Amino acid sequence: MNKPTVHDIAKEAGVSLATVDRVLNARPGVRKQTIARVQEAVARLGYVRDTSAANLARQRQYRFVFVLPEGPSQFVDTLTAALREATAAQIADRLLVKIVTIPAHDPHGIVRVLQGLNPARLDGVAIMAPETPQVRDAVARLRNAGLAVVALVSDLPNAPRDYFIGINSIAAGRTAGLLMGRFARAGGEVLVATNSLRSRDSLERRLGFDDVIAADFPGLAVLPTVESFDDPRRMEAVVAEVLRSRPRLVGIYSMGTGNTRILDALRESGRAGELVSIAHELTPATRRGLESGAVTAVITQNVGHLIRSALRVLRTLCDRTPIFEAQERIRIEIVVRENLP
Image (tube, rainbow, N blue to C red; front, side, top):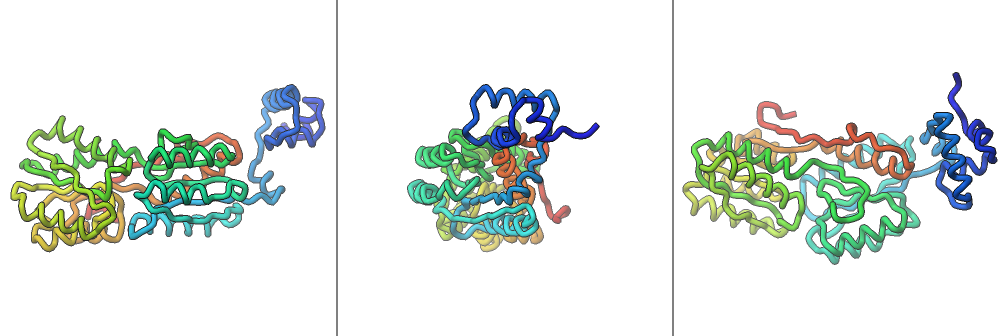
């Protein structure tokens, strides 16, 4: 039996082909009763639309913007490289992708960038930014203008985004807690460091980490979080001071950026390899740390999968088709020296 076509839908619903086209593409100018009749015909016939073919026939281009933090970050660099690779490989899918940068810890600066986006020239936006009231309002403006919006890496659960692409940060923190507890069996103090707890992923990682340590490893005492606030020298200086002044220190948990300076402080102290060191994201710095033994384990995610998933979800949202949840689930991965890719 042949697959039903738009001609079959028009005949079944008793409308013109032009009306069927308007309904399938959610364009205005069709009465509610007619829309319902066309949708009922689609359901009765079991019609499944070939979105790719329809977009190709209409010469449609998807216009997406990825909003990423500016400044030195090896993880953001790997995201950018993966995005360029993915878009270069999908030119046939008619993707137009632009990267714009934001000052990661300046809410007003982030809002200025988001307000500078022209919804009339875009179809979707992927945003990697900390959630603040100002950012939530800016995201709402983009959604109200009809754009598809996904949160990337760090979620915006209280903003009206359409979807989140990334790992569960609380689960990632719990994983770090389990690793720290298993490796640092003798007990002692653990330093936790990040760029800023304003970042939701860092805050959630700390919550998950603390839960596991408190429940399962009472011999470990977790110190207050050290924050560098975009100052690499501050990160190195504070970590170096903790290494000098805390003889009971047995581990370091790096929840965000700043791994290069943390590793520098470890090497200078002569304690690299002696302490348990857990970090996030496989970057050139954490890779070198694993190879040298200064880093015990890295909790990471497949950056290529992350970017490809964001592109697929944005396209799916634009086409108003179902998201294949299992395909878009980003898994937590644990990398040690012995399984380095």
